Length: 470
Image (cartoon, rainbow, N blue to C red; front, side, top):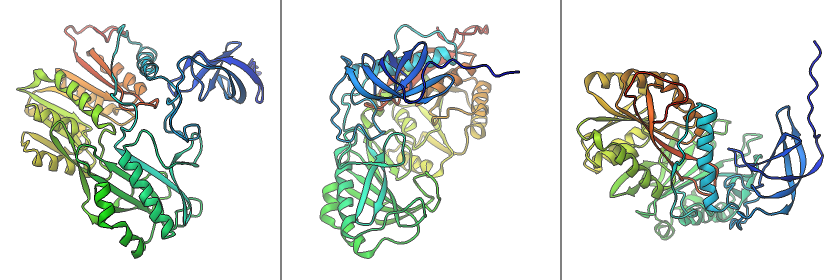
């Protein structure tokens, strides 16, 4: 049988005047030419652009917006000097109100398209008080030769670093610490790891900071070898450490030839292996690689919302699955809930246990292992009122979904950083109905979305497709 000839109305290299209609979930502008969809990175709804076609597929194409003929009324001036190169923040040119609208729409579209669910007319947002200088962790790639290091984030669509002295969404102390270390790298001509020939020493830099406690933790990620003694002498100058709030300097050794940032081994160069974050009067003991929300002020708002949703669980048990460093569990324990956190990453559980101890929260228990391993045992011993899941971007595994359905908690709180996998998992939790949704803007200026969903048991056993909402 002869192959069908696809009628694609453009070819690579074509130049077209295009109106940008909306945004894709990736944050790229969407245009249409003779019914054919074209993605325009960097373009906003309301723009009219001259686009050069750079890629075509049977379903869509990609254009490079080489000229803006008319500008969207929602455009604002981006403050970052490398905004047009860096792939970190796509939305610095989009007004904040429109950023929130975009994120709500992506959640709605995902629930409708993937899970075929009825969506409420209004989904509430929890906006950030400030769209800049919020991120409490910087994970920097390093490239270049000794004496001339490029430190920053990768340019969009490449493996080249968009080098800059500052990143506008990072806490100022993180920027200051990075630049201080850059000066020392130049002064001591520290060799930089080359991922092509697997040579060199320094391959990454991680800086974590708490604006509430003023503490900073620094991790130098290296390949094989030791850092020069002269460099370490300058790195541990008491005056600079005190000015930047540094409480610990670590060397993390990563000998894997991959894009994974951290290796398995860390050793203390100076100070301690953790820093302390404080939210709502709670002290959190956090190590270099432990998971914690990157926007501390928004984390407080998220935890407060979860606390409201669990008020009925005061005399019953709450399971906090994918517990990370125990942020949600500890917050709820302080409000009087009996909480059991489950997390398979052992260092994170050690952080959580230490935090429970220093905050005097003995009724907050933490178990190392998988949800499917521990949750059934817990459910056989006590009634589970609320089951909280905060999985990575890939969402919950089928085993976790089935475990929850067998346990049948009174309610489930799903915290998601990926609307697509959120919708997929909600579709499978068919004996529950959605009672409330909040879009929490944990990542201003970016296309990334945090969603909190409360789902409760259905009152009747009947399940109808597309009726997960009350």
